Length: 219
Ligand SMILES: [Zn+2]
Image 1 (tube, rainbow, N blue to C red):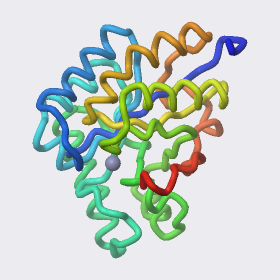
Image 2 (tube, rainbow, N blue to C red):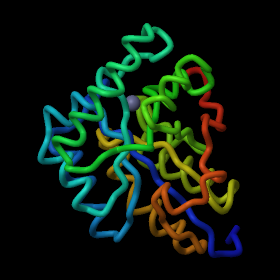
Image 3 (tube, rainbow, N blue to C red):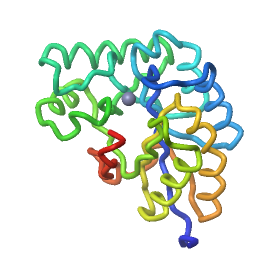
Image 4 (tube, protein in one colour):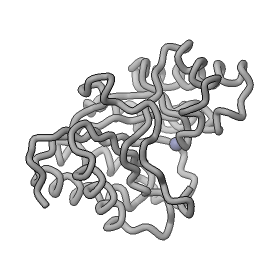
């Protein structure tokens, strides 16, 4: 099922405090692995995570990856007040700049994608100087019952089906994500894919909301 290349795939990783079991050092190994594979990607960085792991956060930027804002507290943003929204976005921005040296504007992703379609939330996101980035394909790398092979299959099949300009959702902390990288990179490249950062795609190709439906048992 080789797709007629070339087509561009933007892997995106939410860099955040793990909310499921995760092996110490896996986020650093993920960055080393991406470098070894010569894959540039986009990282949405949680402010409090950047405060806790400033060296790892800095390595994202020095590795040539695009840095975005993934909120400070990783709350479901529709639950926040107007003041809460603007202070959360700005706190994350400050923490990300301090750790990475890079201004994450204009790239923002709501935790869980929650609030992507919420006009009040998005007004605050825009007023803070951001645009929201959703995804076309979810690697579904967070459930404990998923294997690296499952994640690889979701990403490869999803990107091949979507074609050029595919934005893929992944996370930095699951062991299975790091384990799936090799297969994702080699199989997609074999099919003609080129890995790009979100800022290399035309703005209208970057989805504002999550297009893929994650099966309800995984939400
Ligand atoms: Zn997240």
